[in-house]
Length: 228
Length: 219
Image: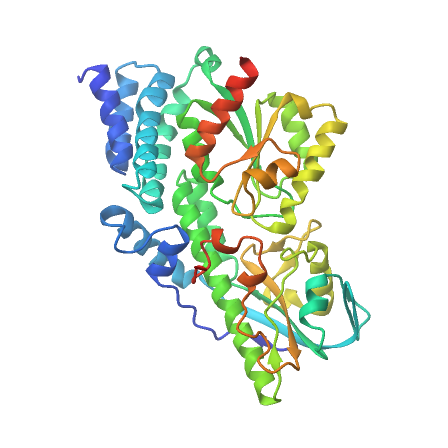
C-alpha cells in the first residue's frame, strides 16, 4: 500500500493569525513574536505522512456507496457527489505525534495558550497535508481524463463518524502510526481521513469547495475566501 | 511594600501587558504580604482578564494578544491557586463543568474560555476532550454545577448534544443545570433546537449570557 512521507509543510504567519481572527498588521510586539516563535518551534516537530488506496465502487445507493470490498460508506453526500464515480481514493494522513506532545507539555506546564496555538498550527499542517493528498488524486484523475470530487471525511457533512472503521479496515494506517479509538478518534489527533472520487463530469468539483457543503460556511475561520 | 490596592492593580496590569515575569514577581509579593490568595485572584489577575475582555470587545486587541494574557494569567494562578485556603472557596458565582463532547477532540477555545470564566468568579471543572455522557453525568453528581458546557467543533458531533440532553432527562438532572454550548459548529438557535439552553460567539458573550441565566433562575 503506497505511503508518502517526503512532504514539506509550509504554514505562514498569516495563515496562523487568520485562524485566530487577525492579520499581521493588526498584531504587534510580544503577541506577534510569540506566534512567530511557536511557528518556528513547530516546524521540526512535524512528521507528515499519508497512506492511500484506490478502491472500485460496486454500487451507488441513495444513502451511500458499496465498495468492491463489500464495505458500505453510509453518507448521502457521498452518493450525491460520487454518483458518476467508478473509483474512490481513500486516504489517511497525519503530522505525527511530536507536535501534540509538545502542546501537551505546554498545557501541563501552565501555558494553555501556547498549547492552543501549537494545536492550531497542527490543524493547519494537517489541512495542508490533506490538500497535498487532493492534489495527488487530481493529477491521477487528470492523467485519465477524469475529474475529482471534493474530499469527504467521516464526521463532516452528515457522514457518520463510525465510518472511520471502514478506512482503518481498508488502509494499513498503523504503517504511518495512526490508530483509531473505540469512539472513532484518531491518534495522533492531528490525523485525518478523506475519500476522493474520480468522477466523470467535466470540471468535477465545478469550482466548488468543501466550504460550499459545510454547515459552518462563513463562520469558519479556517476558510480562506469568505463569501460576499 | 506597595499598598494592597496598588499591588493588585499592578498584578491586573501585568496580565493585560502579557508580562509573565511581572505577574510572577507580583504574585510572590502578594503571598509575602499575606493578602488572601482568592482576593488576589479575584481583584488582581481576574481584573486583568476582565480588562483584556473589554479591550477585545472594543476590538483594541485581537486573539493573539488574548492568548498572551491567558498564559500570563495562568503563570499567576500557578503561584496563587495553591495558596487559597478552604474557607475562601465558598464565594464563587457558580460552578461550570466544561468538556469537549465525545467523538470530538478539538478544544475549540475551551482553554481560552476557562480563564475568562474564572476571571468572572466562576468555578470551572475541566473534563477535557472526547468526554462521554457518563462522565458528564458523574461530574454533575459530584460537583453539582449550575452550568454544563459542551464544546463541539464538528457538525456531526454537535448532534451528540441532543443525546446528552436526553440522557440528562432520563437521569433526572436536566432541570438542575443550564446546558450551554460553544464552538464554531453551533449558534444560539441551533443549540436551543437541540435541547440546550444557549450558545454564544465568544467567552465574554458567554459570561454575560450565563449571568443572565443565573439572574432568571435566582430571581
